[in-house]
Length: 345
Image (cartoon, rainbow, N blue to C red; front, top):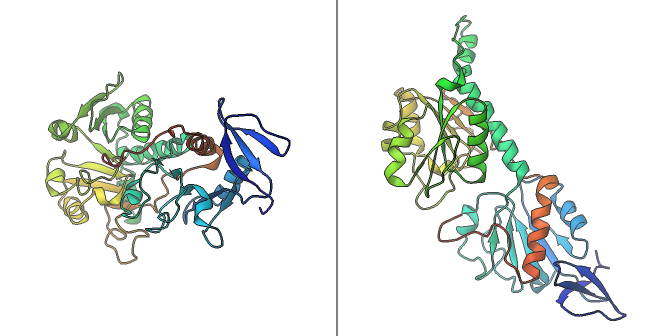
């Protein structure tokens, strides 16, 4: 990487000692021979290991580094990160973009030492949405066909016939209509399920009913046979699914959480399952991850645990947005999908 040169934006022509690299139609980057490279910092402990190489191939004029060891902090112009240590980005005085390697940003906004004035962009990845939609459809079908009860009958060596009801008899509620929620709702509707959706602000959809705001939340949840949680974690949504919420849902309903573990009051969830208000819960996200071995969720007969693998970002489908955002930020343009810290997403 030592042969890479620094990148500086100039609007004019280059001389014989410079090389032009196009970023935007009205901008170019000038590579200065012999200067230090500008750096893209990559940090993630859980993402696809192909990411650093994918970024380096897409942006060869930069140096992609996994740590800050041995490099001047002022050389870092962009950070592509997931669940970074608090304060990691504080010293990066020339940082122009924080690109989140996922759809949720709650852990970033919880860092009190984020550099001020640097835009944070969340990732809108079609591959992430596709894998999430597959998972939600899979688990919804399993709950609708009561495969949890079939598995229990098998363990007990009981031949139990459960009538296969058509999807039109099942109402699936999607709580959260962002990119992931809309993708799941549209696919479930196309598959034949009756779908309803809820979001903070009104979103009209021709193929399913939508609800909006706190005043319509109770009516929404009372319609659901399967409730899918796809809300961002904010001050308003933390602990939303509490005892009062669960007491007000349809008796025998089921729940799928693929959003954030902190949306749910864990003790209230177990009480609702033990009391029969909820028939089953599929949980892919948890307040503490990895889920401790002694956590009661593991052994609960009405809970399915999966290890936060409902979906993940894919370099093959997401590298384009990351490349575009870095180039936009360094060209003085607003990145795509910028986070509003006040809203929390």
